[in-house]
Length: 470
Image (tube, rainbow, N blue to C red; front, side, top):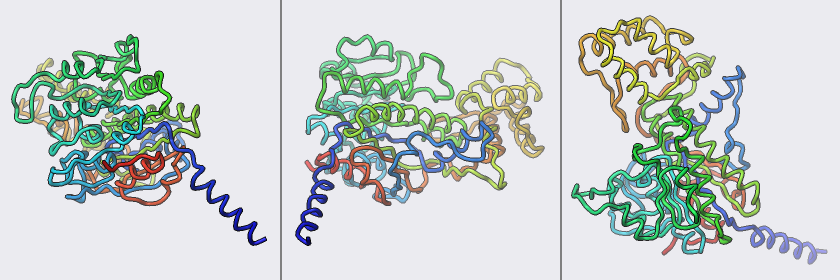
């Protein structure tokens, strides 16, 4: 009997250890700047739209495995996206500003994307910001400075990865030394990449399985796609990019793929302390995750989806004093802070001596202030002082966040909407908050305990039988 029990245990051990299905398809999805409270705010906001005192979960927050991880870098308690992206891409910490290299910028590290490519898988790197931005670049570039955009673009060629997508490239003809250099785009084509500008252009491609770089339509901002809240029909979005990546990476391919998808502008709206725009960016990222989940449902035993963040931005808090939440009113905001700034600026320039009542009507139309959203006397006085300086005295009144310089009147108005909507922010920069981790599929069970951010790709590599060592 004892012998039979021992044999049974050995059999079960063999099943558990050696019988696990390796993921053939890996989705590594990163919400840049997405802390647990960005998720919580979005889920509370969704429930509030139906007057429910609960949360309506996002697709990935229902995944069977969830935990949290550290975010500090080798040099700082608060990471930047280069060091944060490096930790997720290569499984090693480095100092802020460095991409996939050691802190002295001497040794280059190999990312899990390179490991997947070496194993015969196709590889895609996608984002809602520029393709050469820090987080996506961490997966294919090795540079001592995240701002070496041209050099990062050359590393893209070296990677030989199969699919890239995002808004574009920041400095395709200017080196880090600020010298004019040959454009990257002919170099991409010479290396065998077909260039597509917009989804319609991509859909015309006869062979989507060929190496591809998908960018936004010509004439659009190469820095980033539009914020989700500002997008109109026909504007490229992250879910469409994810669909295009899946189409390209699966075309006549039976060896599997590795796909990194970054929701890059969660970070940008959080830097601006723009709560509603952050919620809309979260929902945009969630739509991309849904595309991955739909693929998972077709290949549940062969697919791993990992959703995490490189860091949290802004130190957002849901609840700023009262026990009652009022997040429902955030839906009154119709456009991002950046677009509202343009509206305010254009109105000031086109309307001589605009009255305070007219400006209040402008804010009511776009944010609900002074209409659906009640404004206290104190807050109105703060807005009125900015109006006097900007509209009457014609003095510059702007405020700066990491990615934008905005009209102070617009920023103050959104600050008031945030306050009335029960949202507070600790800063306009990154925080040291833990990052959330959600997983489903083959190998997901490894993500069940608190871990270092560097453990995330290591566990993924182990599950897929990949090596992060050169």
